[in-house]
Length: 233
Image 1 (cartoon, rainbow, N blue to C red):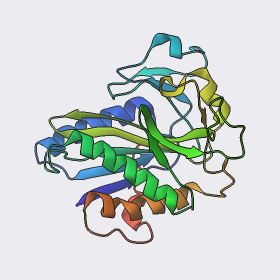
Image 2: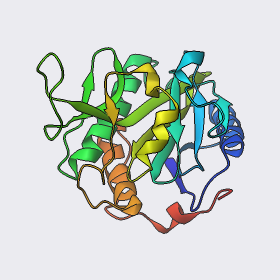
Image 3: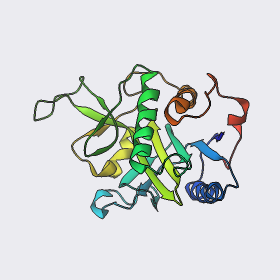
Image 4: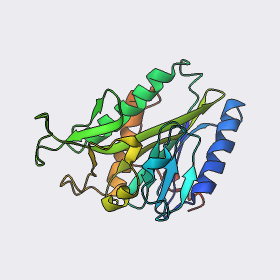
């Protein structure tokens, strides 16, 4: 079974990392269940293992955390759902590429519940949505914005870090970095796309779409009471 935890309020980033590392170690030893932890953070930037210093364009704006996850710079803040994913990839086939694809599909299926088509693009990490309401690119293609980021780390074949989906964050906060090192495209959110989605709506969809992707027992339609456990909120 996979334990789901939902923290209300804003979770301290250092505390979140400590919790993930401890939980991942226990999962690897068989001392704890796998875990999905849903949080929000105060505004901050994180630097992945491939981050380039020039992509931090406003270093004094928000706290900056060096992260051991893959990827480059990302933003976290209120209105963005961060799902920390602590799963035993070893027991799930030792296939990292497949695991990342599963994370991508989880996001895409979740967005589909709101009639929003998420897509992946070769050479561009994360999940993207087309923006026909914006001017086309210089090559004549439909404009696209990023709506979700993915960045994980594995230790002893157990994952931590995870995904983030923009529900209604302050999109202007993303201007302090070059998100994931990509300059040609923008960033959007569910609300920015004209969808009146609440964080709780997204949580229900994430929970419901988890089992079909990762093969666990079917998730209930509504979040169970145990999802309301407060962890360092």
